[in-house]
Length: 218
Length: 263
Image (tube, rainbow over all chains, first blue to last red; front, side):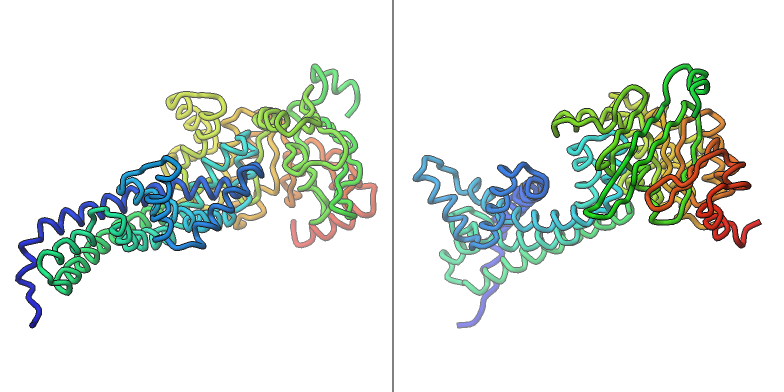
């Protein structure tokens, strides 16, 4: 029996909805991962030891274990201690924390690379340590690592497919549902791949716009 | 400085450094320096590289804390021994009164010229946006760069960057300005515009301590010159004395090397 892409158009609506959720999850988890990444980076570099070491341990743990396992732990595991998250929230948090750990490393490297004269100039004006870090050092560090963060966002988009296994009705799960009705795995996985690819193109276009704007502020 | 001069200034010195010493491990970078600067006085610090003159300057706002000795700004001890929490509040307060200009400008590259100048006044003096903008415009007029107010630092020449850095420091309305080789990183043709601004500032009776390699500028603008070598003040006096008739052989030999090829 040959391939029959004729079955796909009937499910384009369902796939589009799934793709829409993939975008929503990516944007939310991505924003969360960058904000949390900045906090982990700053906490890991400047925090009181009581903050610094737990943050470092956390980052190390989230980079050292599989994302899939982390999702299971957050979605199925936390219920045992009374934290019952719905699949969508669990997915966003899991993806967000996982990529926050990677972002934290990148942002830390960016912070360390900001010229010491910047901190000195801020402190000399009378700004506090915190004001100098938050207004002068971190914005420059983040600006400098935008390309690396962008790569992580692309990885996050692709890895968002994993949240289908905890039942979030995103693009991959939508494709699987269509397959379960039509028994056409190649067609629908391929269609989903095309969707991912198109979303990725949009994401890359957005990232390169951001990079260009950042470049202008150098 | 004689007692009569200090009385003429109305009160004590603006800056009073007592027995400043600094060690990095076993290396003595500063070996007991004393300096009093009157209000409105302009002091140049010259000397070979490695003589400790930048370290000394950076000790005045405690950017490079001393190992021992005291730094006073009027009646406030800059390097007061405090717990770290108290120290942080204290030093942030004191530094608002001590403007500093760096060799490499250290403008904030992610902020416009306007934002570079208004950031600290807005955050620390709680100025409104209008007030801070007014202040930025006023200071930029002073350094002749009002037409660059909405430029990014990357769009400016080195001389312009340094003039913005001066405007940024002035916007905090400091009592003293410290210049750490403000023109050393500039192309020769850009030095004069920065010197011009510093001269103007001198004429407005700003108290200034200037670490410099430019003997001509020190001679023209400063009231007093300190020659440092090996972490000590070797000789100190009016520009006329230091440049025309220094008493110390080390001063003479430094000036011979430095003035060679000039004039």
